[in-house]
Every structure is written in structure tokens, then in C-alpha cells.
Amino acid sequence: MPQTNTRVTLAHRPVGEATPDCFALEIEQLDELDDGQVRVAVEYVSVDAGTRTMLRGEGFHRQVGLGETILAGGVGRIVESTVDGWDVGQAVRGGLGVQMFATVRPDHLEKIDDSLGPLSNHLGALGPSTGVTAWIGIRRVAKPKPGDTFVVSAAAGAVGSIAGQIAKRDGARVIGIAGGPAKVRYLIDDLGFDAAIDYKNDDVNARLRELAPNGVDVFFDNVGGPILDAVLDNLAMRAKVVICGAISQYDDMDNVTGPSMYLRLAERQSTMEGYAYFHFPESIAPATAELAAWLADDTLRCSEEILDGIERYPEALQFMFNGGNTGKLLVKIA
Image 1 (cartoon, rainbow, N blue to C red):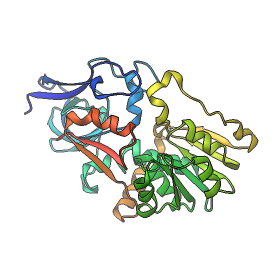
Image 2: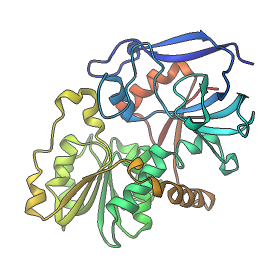
Image 3: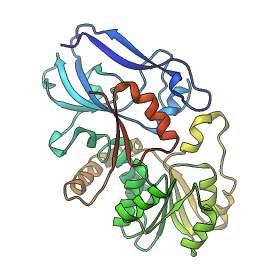
Image 4: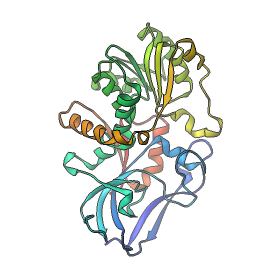
């Protein structure tokens, strides 16, 4: 049985960008399990933009204290157990944190079906913060109709790429906004989007007028800031804007830049709605089932970018905020 645990902790709170020096790698001795506990060998942890909002010391999301393990969703297998029904070898998912071994009670875990493919799928296409978030955002919130012009930002990222594929499946004309020519090619050639805008090299407003001359019917936003303003300025009548995230704002949550073009909502009788997947608990199971079916018949694609080694987690988080990843970003712990 393991004697020590390696974990990534918060060394000091970031000011602006969460750079690698904000984190520390610590080794601790593991105690014997108490009754009612299991120990999980963590295999992968999810790298999510929302983690940045947990490093502030206050906020909507649960916060990480100084010296505490960085919070992250993870998957792994039980290696020790004192709980009936939670057996060694069982694959599980939960808030395992960025560490090699998580010692938790089963009410913090869920059993997962490892016959559905690699365990990493349960953080990517089947993950609550990824595929399930995208499915709920499209099917329960955005609800694009056949023929709608649907625009998604951070379209080459984990949530955006799946959201765009579901909207396309539901009959929308899909335009993705992403950074760089390689991501534009990925959206069109690999994912089947109808068009894509390179926000790093294109004038987003001008390209939207060109690609959506009759306006944007549904906008699924993961970015906020100037991109949100550009799309608001190009809304169709009775459009819907869905706020899933705002990665452009997370480094300075005390000075969030709100949309300057919000009056377009009134002018065009449009609405804006935010959500998180846990607002729709009744939809998690049907979302997971349908996503699994699409994975099985190879009609859903979710790229995974995996950095190997727990020590690379700080690098991975910075990589995400610099727009480096395509698809789901993970760190392989073991």
C-alpha cells in the first residue's frame, strides 16, 4: 500500500495570471484509513478554466486555502477500502484534487463504467465540466433550432467543441471562434463546423457580418470580453445568448469587464442566460447516456491533450489560459 502522497498545493494567491510559481509540489506521509474511507490512485485530473476562480480566497466556487491541495476533478481506481461495495480496482470519478492518492469518503465519489473506453473519457466527453456541460447548455438552455445561425466562442476547447457538434447535430449552422489557423482548420475539417473565425488574426465583428449577414440566432459564450461584445453587435432579432464561461475575465475577477453592447439585447428583443451543469441535476444522466452513445458510434469527437506528470499541472493551467490546448486538457498523474 502507498506510504506517501505527492500533491500540488497553493503556495501563494495569484495576482493576474496563475503562473507556476504560485504552486508547490509537496510530499506527505499517508495515514491508515479510517472506517468509512477509501483511497484512490488518481490517474488523470481535469484542467479547467474555472479553477482559476478557486484561487482567489473568495468567490462563487469553492476556494483553495494556502497550502491546500488544488481542487480538480479526477478519475482513478480504488487501491484501499474500508467500505463495503467500494472494492479495490473499482474505477471512480470525483473531486480528487491534484494529487497521486486521494483519501475520501464514498459520498464524494461516483462509480464509473470503464468499459466505455479510457478513463480519461470520463473527464472529457463524458465529464461533468466538459461533455455534460455542453449537452445541457445546448439541449436545456440554448435550444438551437434547425436553420439557426449558432456561434460558439473558445470553439476548439473542450466544452465549445462539443457544444458546436451538438448544435450541428440539431440542425444549426455552426460558426466557431478560436485562436489561430490550426484551430480554424480543426473546427472545419475535423469537427464539421460550417465556418470559423480566427480571433487572433481576423476582425471578429467584420467576419461575423460576412458570415452571418442576417444575424446570430444563438451565441454560446465561453470567453466574455470583446468577443461577447462583437457577437452582441451582430445579434438577430429574438436571439439568445448563453453564458457558459468567461475565461478572458478569470485572471482579474475584481475588475470584470462587462459587455458594453448589452443594449443590443433590448434593441433586438433578445435574451441572455447563464448556467452551470449542476443547475440541471435531472439532466446529467440522460446527457451522459447520449454522449456515451455518440462516442460508441463515433459521431462525437473530443480531442484530448494530455500532459504527463503531476508536476506539470501548473504548466497545464497556464497553457490553457494562453490558449494553447485543443480539446480537453488533462494531466496524467499515474
